[in-house]
Image 1 (tube, helix red, strand yellow):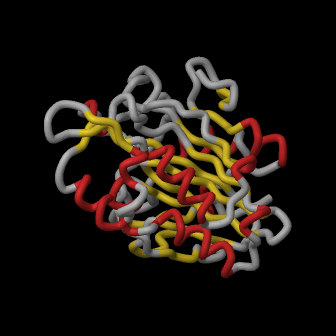
Image 2: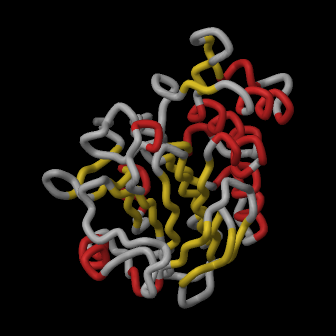
Length: 250
């Protein structure tokens, strides 16, 4: 496991990022060992009291958690002061203290973006569709709208599918070619005929840099969910579970 991820529990129920932890941001990215993940249709929301007790150890109060119906887009929703369902979006933002934002994944990237000086926080769900639709750029722009400056923003990318395991074909390649005609080929390597291995990590790191983020402020442990089925759910591997990445302004 990457030294940039600190495990909590044995086996770990969640990880924290070394860089964000050192700066004092309450956050967590869960594993398949985290108890108490509930269906979105549950009356009390997507976390059970058991999950709340586990993630409280990371400084997260799930009684105020904000989440959204994720649709693989680039829409932004601002969390209400008391949390709850924020609508249909793949990017959540807040300037409220102690309101955890939650993004759910099972291979896609979950990005935490934070400007401590501006007291602005965003979490983004970014798969190939989100990449094509500009979710990464939209997340940075949403933070700027809350007073953030891109050069101050810290970004952490949770465990997600890596270029070792992410084989794609149409319509992914045509979508990337249309959105990024002069760049997308840097993000793929040929696989079997008609297929390529897609590196969403490199693609979105490049998009973050293009949006003004300092490369030194991007924390990506490069841990592949499809490779580590012992710890993570992976849609590509046929898993039905989901992981949560959460953070709250201190």
